[in-house]
Amino acid sequence: MPDSQDWTQHLTAFLETTVRITEAWAEHTVSAAVETADAVADELEQQWGPVLDAWAEEVNRAIEPLETVLDQESDRIITEFTTFITPVVEPLVTGLEAWAEAVSRPINNTVEPVMNDHGPCMGCRHYHGQVYGSTMFVCALYPYGPEEPKCPDWQSVWTDPKTDPK
Image (cartoon, rainbow, N blue to C red; front, side, top):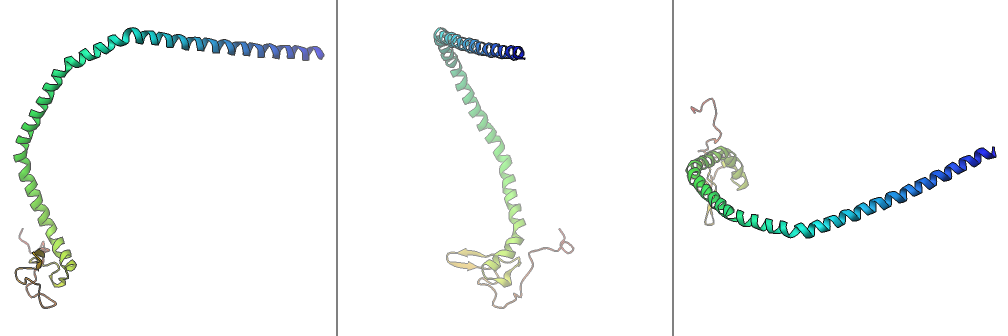
């Protein structure tokens, strides 16, 4: 059996040497390829860099008037669009604001009186609740709020769908 061990040791040594030589060759080849690529890139940059820079400057100079015209034209289009759309949108916005105020009035007339310590006014359609100077104007019927715990002129801000003709 000594011959078979000798044979496997020689084969192992041969394979290790082959791997080491192959690794060295691959490292050298890759290193040489990288150096060559760097040299080619440097040479291309030296040869073509100024040409490409000059070309880019020329293109920028040629495009500059087009950019100016496009900027002016876009400003003109924006102005015309604004002139056209403003009369259409303004009434819509005004109507939307009026609608939002009408829709929120029941909620405001229900919540705000309680926040302002005017409990009897809660949910009343006459409630105004605005401060003028330093005076709170509660409503036209009772500018400082009703004296009684229950207002005799109270009318609900919440409409009854059964009795409301709308």
